[in-house]
Image (tube, rainbow, N blue to C red; front, side, top):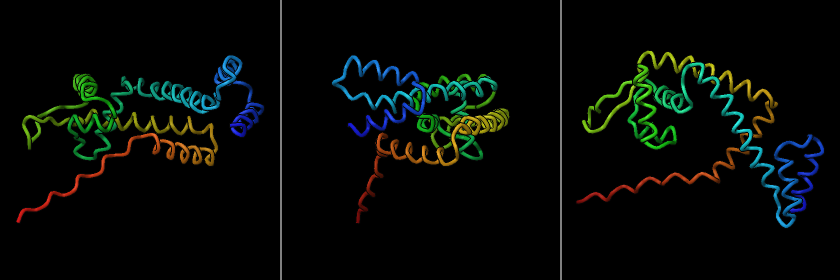
Length: 190
């Protein structure tokens, strides 16, 4: 704990105190019995995420898209030709509920960017597909999105960006629940 606190103090001498540092100082004053060092990472990561979301959503808005609608169109485009997925797949690829996907699809369908039709193999199932207008829109929006991400990452050196990606990849792997292992094959009957 002492080493971590000393490292945090050394870093804080290099940079003027930011919002998170001021919060930590207040908590150290009010609750000296607690090590508030984790706020240095988590608080800043939370603030960075909020700022990045704001910057990313500004690009989506230029295409009259919200973040969720951009995600749906991007998931369909990533599927490759014919740019189709079942609503459940879209929910998994965009990490939201099927209800949230339905709301997004309603808006995208009204805008002429996607279509929905019964699945050929199961008439109860549905298939969502990009329209030509939807594919053209997401291609333009994604090009601007990637340009924007490069702009945002330019605040870091390439070595810093690579180090940060490595750290976040490792941390995320430890925090995210592991994917369920595949079911074992069923024994064949003689």
